[in-house]
Length: 205
Image 1 (cartoon, one colour):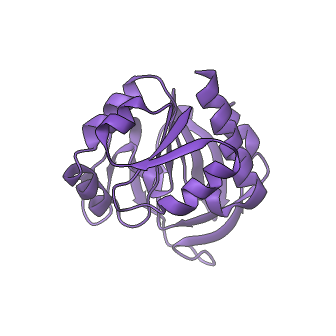
Image 2 (cartoon, rainbow, N blue to C red):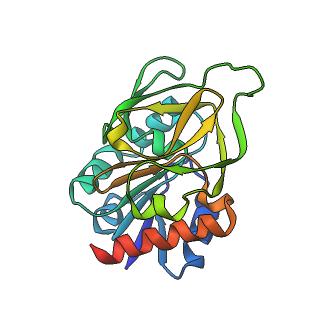
Image 3 (cartoon, helix red, strand yellow):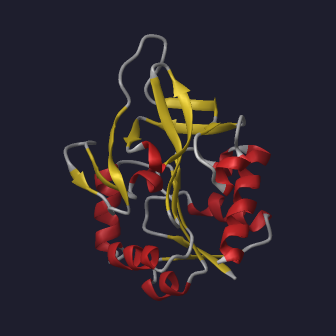
């Protein structure tokens, strides 16, 4: 079984691939729609700005292949900016349409006394909904780097981290589509455990 990492020029694909390979899964980095269509599990990584990332996905002709994959029922995991791209839209540098796989909007973290933007560093996860990936990091610290966060219905929020007055969704789920705001590949053994749980989801489909 093969996990395909979508390579569209806006993700830290090599570090993500190494983390996945550590769990024993076969990994392929690709921007070929055929590889995406045939993947057993799909990972959409991402760093940088929402609008630019969407432009790069469109330029590579990958928006529809990712949407079609999501309809297949196989596990799809978005990481950091890749998680945000799963939503309807973002306000970063103006309103930009996302992939629309999970209802909601990406907005800027508010300015709060004693809390810097971006959130950068370790934060403790609290599980809100039962989910295999969320269970892995319940009460565990994972590594975050982001200035925007998602606003969505609580039925899609599997875990959160506190950041001042904001409960930042750290894991979101809509059926087979999952997103994590933190970086599993930078989150030590707990991050590796999350990849193990993702592997189990892929094998179980």
